[in-house]
Image 1 (cartoon, rainbow, N blue to C red):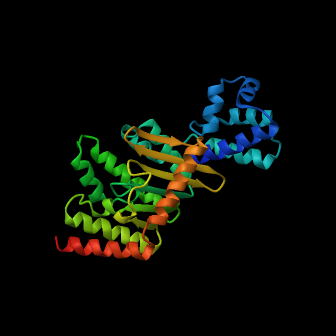
Image 2: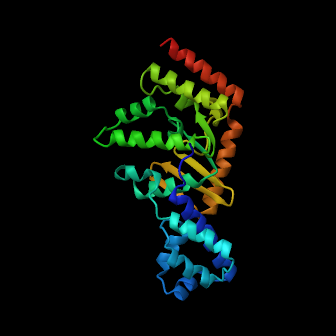
Image 3: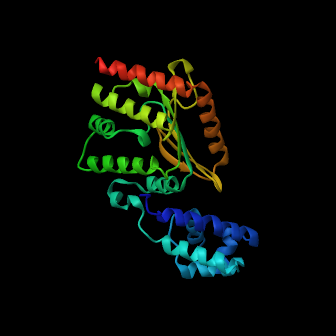
Length: 284
């Protein structure tokens, strides 16, 4: 059964449609806010897709922007009603920061997810035993089990039949690093092989022989959309950052992904490495 439509999808639909209508009207955000007698911050939040939108406010906006097509207005009104629901991750609010919640909203609307992590298997692809071993190696607390549940719930959505296209580059360091015991690694590597061979994800191993590259110190994920620019999420020593507006930064990571892809093993070579490591952990 496909997951229910998330409110973030409706907010994103409104964001794109209303920004396009404002642009066609030739209004800046400040000019539109002044004519609507709203604060500029309110309009910015609506166009960022970070807040819900009432039908009353929507009607004021479409009137100001000159949108007259009844079918378009009815469609946007339905999206406005759907923008007020709870996000799928609302049950985990106690373990989600606001920046990460914003990222999850983008991820839930994405048509593709591409990424790379230099030291561990990306969270989208981790088995429950693998992620549990990661948390156990840190500083487990009373909320650790909830964080693990969140990661698995997120994975189920990403890898579902109706989920986005998933393309991940897996560093050889991550594939060889023993997280948990041999059984955990066998299970994790077997899961990766199943994802790759079934077509549920496109995976490429980046071998040690690839040498130095631009993302040795940080992981990054690129969210792709059919009707919008990419969103980039970067994690590094200075924390995490979700970026939708810095075109130069996003282009840099798009180029970085392609560079890493060119240095990676092909899909057949990646499966061979999975098999080699699975056999290794059968004997350890």
